[in-house]
Image (tube, rainbow over all chains, first blue to last red; front, side, top):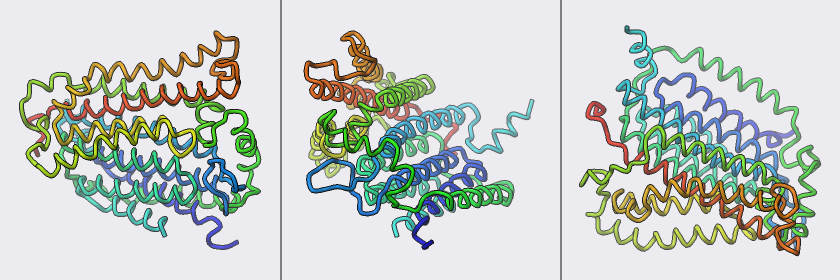
Length: 117
Length: 322
């Protein structure tokens, strides 16, 4: 097995780990959402990498071309991206409301405010 | 090489403490990701990622930062436990990748099931050379209807949480005023916006033959209007595209999509069956895909604009300047 055989997948996993780390370790809610979107894009990379065929081309049928990459992951990820931004916007809207209610978007400060009677 | 750059920008996002820098870095990250997706033959996806990830997301994040402040507090506790959890997850996942087929191998399981059928039959059955569009709108029409509904729901959620900013006219200047005093920006914007909107229409109607389709066109269309709002002010943009109209568009797109499906039922086919829409099955497919993509475009553009209006029309609270 060569180094390149799984390199794309490993980078996807590394990005996923980075995203996961930001979501767990950071208290700032906006930063958490950025981490979540990194997590999400790593999944895009994973799917699209799996659909690639070496020597293939984009799945738009044309004369003179025979090998096409798999179109199915493209369809799934294309819609996932747009759904992703819509849910990101929903998360950000919640963050804005939290800021208005608590005056902060740091998780620790929100918790300490909740514990006060 | 691109993959290394991707990883580097992700790590830079972890290290940056200024949220403004984080947002700019995530825009760069999205662009590199889009380039990488082009390299991997996913041109439709790359176009979406470039317009959504680097365009709309960045605008939304900046809008949020304006309302919430741009400095991240120093972490209160040591990040050792989260690091361990993340690394353990990474270890398990990388172990898992050893079991999946080698990258680019045409004999992998993913290339054996339905994909060859799509590639061989799609052109004859639907007359659409871009297989991604054919699968999206025709073969997997149910999926796409569901996803359009999810986008619709998220848009409604944002409108409910923040309001769509109808009272913005009370405010004479401020963020509603835009950047009109900069001559260069104004002239360039006037030059670029018509082409941006025209390009959106091209992406919409040429999506059957080249990369593109309703999702991308909707986002680019909304981006054109957002660009206008950023330069000329929210008030003028809302005169051009009133919030009331945006609310209607959000619902109209899903309705068009669902009605195309229902029309198939009325003409004696199944739900979202396009073959019955015309006397010639291939024409019927064309017609169905056209209207479905139009519905997707309307809803996506509407939701993106509604979200932008909701964030941009929100007033900054006096206590949030810290």
